[in-house]
Amino acid sequence: MQIYPMALMRLLLPVALVGAALWLRVFIDNLGTETRVVLTYLPYLLCATALFLAYQFNRCRPLLATLGLGVFYWLVQNQLQVSLSQPEAGRLYLAVSLGVPMLCLYLLLVPETGILNLQGLIVSLLFLFLALACVQLAAWLPGSSEAAAEYYRARPAEGYVLSYGATLLMALVLAVGMVLVVLRNEETEAALLGVLVTLYLTMALLQLKDISIVMCVAGGLCLVWGLLRNTHAMAYRDDLTGLLGRRALGERLDRLGRSYCIAMLDVDHFKKFNDTHGHDVGDEVLRMVSSHISRVDGGTAYRYGGEEFCVVFPRRSVEEAAAALDVVREQISGYRMSIRDRDRRPVRSRDGARRRGATRLGNSHVAVTISAGVAQRSEEHPRPDAVVMNADKMLYRAKKAGRNRVVY
Image 1 (tube, rainbow, N blue to C red):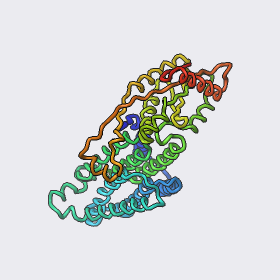
Image 2: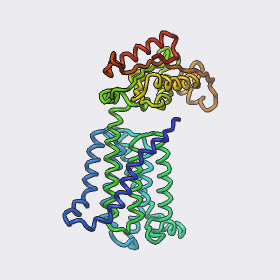
Image 3: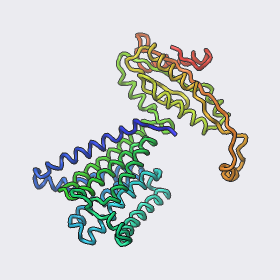
């Protein structure tokens, strides 16, 4: 399983939005009456924007998160602006404090299904069922035992309203979310964590004036930004490898300066490998190769198409680019992939499912190599498309020379 530690950088914007919201809260009293009214309704406007984007881009999880944020803000503004010692307000506060982490955990774990289909309907109904279950749980917990009543009692400490139990639950969901950010490397998880933090701070610091307004504005911005970034990734990133795609490469080539190198790479004998081991294994090969290429020193990797990749080296000489690619080439050639023995797999999938836990299938190991051609901008090749064509010629020479090499 591939891990993306740098994906934690996606959390920088949600953290910045939360910090800015806390800082700006103290200045709300200085605003005029009309500005305060607009600010009060701003979370609804952001939710409406996020709903529109989620529907247009067919994203079920952000849509449900947006609905949850809107309902949360309405409840805080209209039902929880009273003393929590009142029985009804106390039960509602407990239901919300349990529902926020549970629903967020659900949205973090459930796969993206889209909206207008059966899977999307099931995910939405389960979301609603879980919300109702949290309401019932909040009504049952205080009367179950004195220990439970104390553990989930609001205002356990001065200046902090959230119960110990809800605080622990929030922390656990936050930890799970951070792990999923690193594993999936997607914007949706970062946006959901941003919403979780804003709602947590609202519940924990409910005694602060205007805290729900600024935090829900920050949560709405997290969702809108996550949807926009998700759409950008869909347009510019390759789904299989996670690398930037042809569209992103075209825009990058238009912005290059006067000093750069371009490399064209592909996997040696990939069609034969695919025919021998199957397309699923071929996809794993492409993921492995792209993972190594993405870490090339001084360059940015793009998936050009099929088993072919392109790397752009700004402000690098052809010798520097070739040396960096040679390091990657050696890493890939030294990597051993474990392949399950297809000849020993049962013909029927039902038999395979029954035997999978009891029979250890034989494994074989295969090595993968790549070839690369590098070209530099020059007076003879002044335009990026000409440099790409020249790099492709160098790649052809690498193939003719025996493969598993870098030619420039």
